[in-house]
Image (cartoon, rainbow, N blue to C red; front, side, top):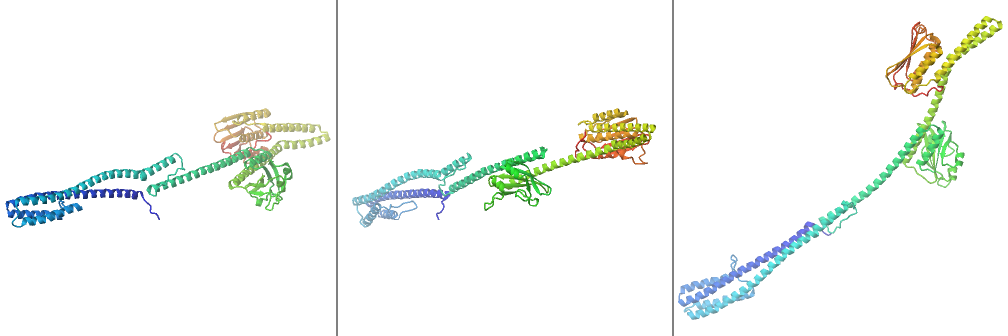
Length: 634
């Protein structure tokens, strides 16, 4: 396994090599300098030997034996110093062969010369000078050999100095190149890669040219760029997917909003079914659609509407018995499901659909709470599958349809109830007024027939007077009923309706009326105004029939709680003695009307001092009742 070379190891190797070369050069220079210093000292010592030689030759001429012996010993010390050397000075004879040979000649000649100069009689001055001349020649040759060696060493030293200068330049260049190769160039590549990534080019990569720290950084940069590129690509994909999901959800919400708006505005079952069939086919991207209604016993399915469904299928499937076809599901097993037209063996499960060219049918039950109201069918000319959101959307749309159908049914029931209630009111009104008058007239007709048989002229005239009075009273009752049913209210103020009612009452009865409206309050809703007006009309009718009054007062107090009083100055009644006859007084009718608007009716009366009917309402917002349809006869 190849060992990884780090940047520090590379720089350390280069620095170590340069250091070794520098140390070697310095050491070699020091050695050459040492040799030059030792050789120079040896030349000086050899020069001293020349001087001592001439000094000995002169001393021999003078005959001073003691002085000669001292000089000989000193000369021997000089020869011995050159032979041994002195590292402390330094002083030594160069180790080259020529210098060593010339030193050997000097030492050998000195031994002969010393022996000649030590015996007695010693040589004369002339002979000693000649011998010294020869020996000095040997010393000069020795000095010349040393100087030649020193010249060579000086040249070597100069060469080393030039080499050291070149080494210094080379080291600087080497260090700069190494810095460029191992630091600046990788760093520049990393900077270029970072710049490209900063510009958005996540495909940028850096060449990994080494296995050192910069190589690891480059490899890490590449991994980082690759990760960022993958994340960015994944982010783009996620954004696209999220955008598609949001668009799908927006389309579903738009479809739900459109469906809710449509079913809220539909006022007819046929229009509702036809519009819903078109809407659900468009939302589900189906080739055709059908809306079927199921009876309460879930015995059959009737086709309410269809969209793009072939006419022959509409005719053949107008009524489907439950269970005869896969489209008409029994209530207990009704679920949203996809029905293939052909089974695994190629047999047609739905013949009509197969002949029409469809391949799949989606069946969605329409439920209102736990009751199965019907079914929606979607027809496709290709195989389909339903995802969970699509299934939820279709079921929600079907729930909107179920709510709309139920709303139409409730509205129809309310209309039916309103008609029945108004018929009951009409029946009570007719019973309390015209029916009793007709019964009285029937009795009078019988009396008239008997009087005519007896030819009793007086009795006949009396009966005719009674019949005339009865007919007038019946005519007045009919007119009063017409006044009740034709009176309209204002959406903002009840005063004009009350004024009209009292004016007609004065015209019919000749009684004086007074209307007083006090206070400030929110106007009553129109449906509440209608019931208040009917209570006032019923109270006026009782005044006309039973009170025998001359004046009627209607006082209205507006405020957070409304109060309406109808007073008269008639004969009154004793409420403690006996309960009033509701069949004539109409108190039950007034209480029924008041109950419908959350109000209360109170009756107070004093015999001989008139009667007061009070209607109290908690306020415009207080009647917590469902809006009632206005009087159908009005």
